[in-house]
Image (cartoon, rainbow, N blue to C red; front, side, top):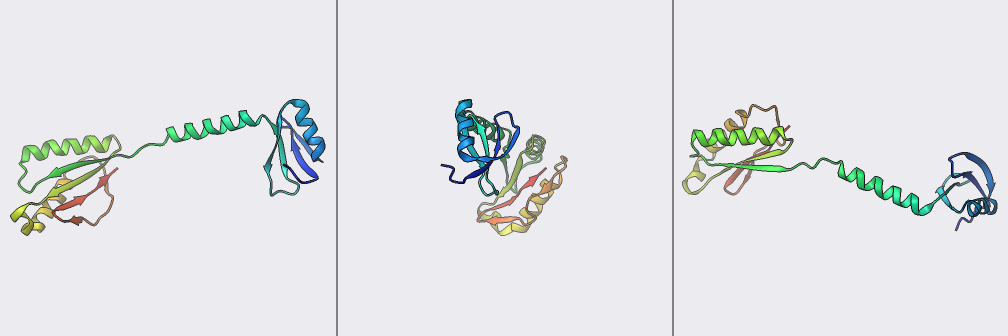
Length: 159
């Protein structure tokens, strides 16, 4: 598959052999029982390496698998309050929010408005801001704008 007359060869130990004819490089790879693989095709001359192709593919898949496992997954946890939520319930929900934030999760704080409560959107917004201000765990707001979607007002604090 390598169609150029000269290649820059790196042997199976990683030693740079230098510029060599492609046929001779293929013979060296065959003698070693390995494959000649073009590593940098755009170079002049192209860089080729003598490696075990199956082993190389396996190592690459393992690297990809390991790097994917090390990524931290950010989870968004939700806390819902109402304008009429009592103080004890708010304290419990504050503790939950702090627990979620210390674990590295984002917290979506949502206030739900029903019926006549929709007319008092400003009071609900101030109650939501007060709730977020009472969270003692250091955090910053993901988006400073409060999201109004229908009957809900949402703020997302994160670490």
